[in-house]
Length: 202
Ligand code: GRF
View 1 (cartoon, rainbow, N blue to C red):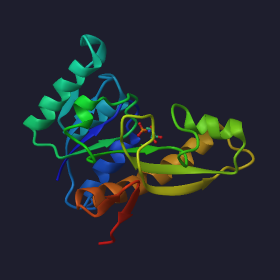
View 2: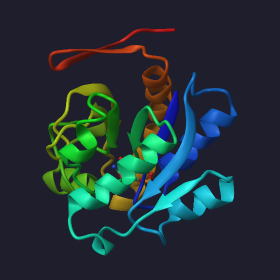
View 3: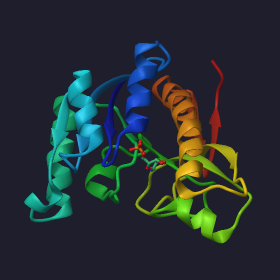
């Protein structure tokens, strides 16, 4: 199953997925492309270093979001990509991408959704004062972090946590969880029934 990972940021989740694949832990998933809207991002750099092909496009070079995404879809189809894994891709997705990849796009978010959707979920959790937060993997729909939940893990907030210390523990949990879920996704072990998902064990 040919996967494109989309990332805008430092790319630690992308790197963890690439490592998991090397270690034989991504099931039948094979990362074939890194798509980034930030050509200078850490994610793009890591892909070049890892020898993974990249598609680096600046949205502002396009007349509309739709034209930007149409270019991406053309490249995904050229490369016969079947699954899209968002890993810190900081853009909403339009029907241009959603329609051809319906139920074949997943995302990871650093909170227990539906709490703290949107940007800076870790800061939102700290400001709110919750004692437990975590990580959610979910299907992507047209909204902001609103698609059906696939998997969640909790992370406890410690009294002395800063945004940095909490983010570090959340990232650790993300890396393990995302590799497991992407493997299940690639192996066709995730079933969506209405808003609920079921992951079959291997
Ligand atoms: C992660 O916390 C992910 O949950 C969120 O964006 C962050 C990306 O981090 N969607 P990285 O670029 O993978 O290091």
